[in-house]
Length: 562
Image (cartoon, rainbow, N blue to C red; front, side, top):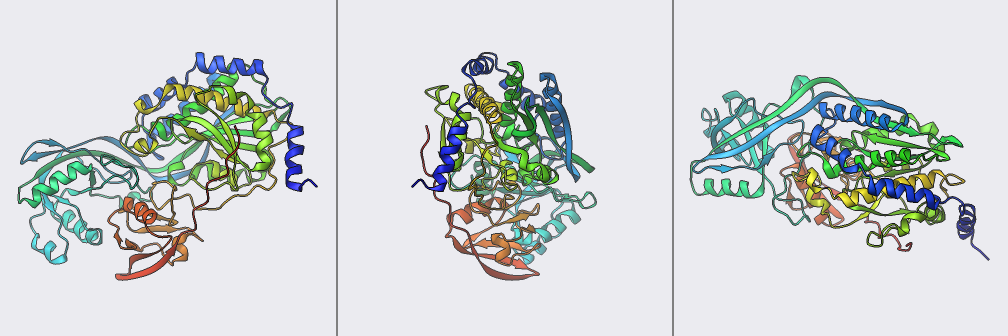
């Protein structure tokens, strides 16, 4: 007797035999996408001419308007910017640099988080070790004008900040190693919390140094040397409200125009570099897939809706708001395809076993696209959160896919670091991915029926990360952090932190035995420790400890496919 679940698969397979992208049409897609590609031109304009695109920055607005104009130039319809929300304060990053002037000249490779203070001019002064006790701070009274303090204790940050502001000190200097597991010591990661008020803007810079620079300064101070440093960091706030948009463009369906396949990525980025692999590459392939399909005169059965969301780095804000606004329409959305994994080539798609026949039919042409760049369909037990905009759709019951990717690019080297620049993109991978995305979108749009949701399972999770945009990959505490990196700003209901009793205003001191000095210490401490651990925090001046327990990591999905 055939099981009901397998019967669904057999019936779906029989119903999709005629849904492939015809060979002649696929040849035109390949020619257009491989021989006349414009994907790198799109990327060049986005990341080199416009630049980084922090949510609430002027650059993001310019990028959204440019993307809409680009979609219009292809001949797409219903092209518009749809506002999803606003931020009370805008942030634009200008140039920044640092150097040691005494006892020897040396460039200091540095950055600051977004939505944090900069300097008003080049600010040169002595570098002193930050006092670790109130008594040590009192001993420095009257000597803090024009100084920088190295490696502040975050438990003392409020008192240190008050003293610096009162005496005219410049700010703080800190250092950090690369994120655990990256295997590199020269990475500077950019994050930050947008939760700032214009009448209470941060006033003191917190300059983060590359590890080798920090270690050099610390060694000099340890040797009793007088150290002088200079920083010029032009961070600018703009009074809001700052309207925030998603970009939408349609290739109308010829038979079922009120049913949709979504193709997209997020257009916003962090601003420590130019936002190339996160997610200029996905924005560029979305634009290029639209161009290819328009160039070959594709007439899909269903509407292919191209979408570029913003606010992704702050917790999928743009896509979540859009899905919530259009929640009553989600039954007509067949699938959402999101490219947000960097410049490596699109190597596969993963769905429920019941979806396999339709997915294999839709993607049949790309299985033989390039022997050295294989593509496969694989089965999963559930759609699980990994931190991109497809999750907004899976939460609404729409199959949302985050492409499998493979290749020679080192994504962790560029992800949120100073190396996320145009030269990190691999042109042949970008061209290949755009062809796969265009073909798959057309194949899904041409299926006789919407992609099945039979037995579709979604593993729930909080995609806001441990705080400030570090991304939700790995264990999640389910909290958002304030600009100091250790104070909880918001707690997600039913998250690990909420179950432990954490509240806004709590200052995290330790995860297990690991001291938390800044936001970026959180994830390595959580991932390296046991699933059941402790969190030590300061609440109303009293140190407390609670138990935190992370859910078991999901098992790797079963293989299969081509």
